[in-house]
Length: 249
Image 1: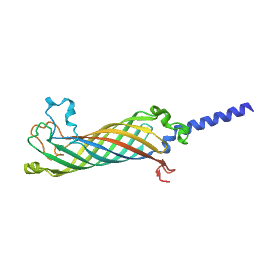
Image 2: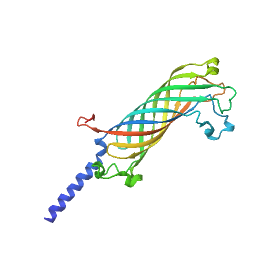
Image 3: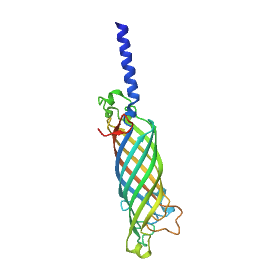
Image 4: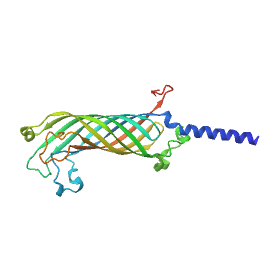
């Protein structure tokens, strides 16, 4: 009798352990939305290198705008995702409080940016593989540091942009818009809140292949335009259907 009981107990443990290891496969697809401030570094505004340590002075409230981001992810392995991203947002550049304040240029840029990215999780949470968590019986906030993911990501994308300048910039002459390639690189963290939802934050830098996102290219410019997003995200995890496609039931 005791041997039978131990055998049953061992089988239950093995089944529970196996199911826990497969939880991520049950939710391979993730829909993510994010919103946050955008920071632009172009040829309008900014300080000369000798007056600006690490570019900190360029981070002013007058330059900050915002962006909205939507993503669809597929988990290739437990540590690697592939991600399709679409971002819409605003960039802003002004000579106010910059090294060329007397020039008086100002530009507002609307962007739409599709991108394909890969993610690598270099620190994975210890909560997601819990069988009790998969059943909603283990709240991650009881051990918040065990419920955090940390990841890096990079990829390739393109940005379509439309520029509106002030009268001084318009009179100087600007290219009103266009399309160019971008390379996004970033780092993020996610809190595994429930089997269905995650909350997170990520910082992304975009290096563009254009020096015209603010409609102006200085003769002293040594690099193309760069912009950053600091996004706060919400993730909804879709169940994987028997056919391998996401299930919306």
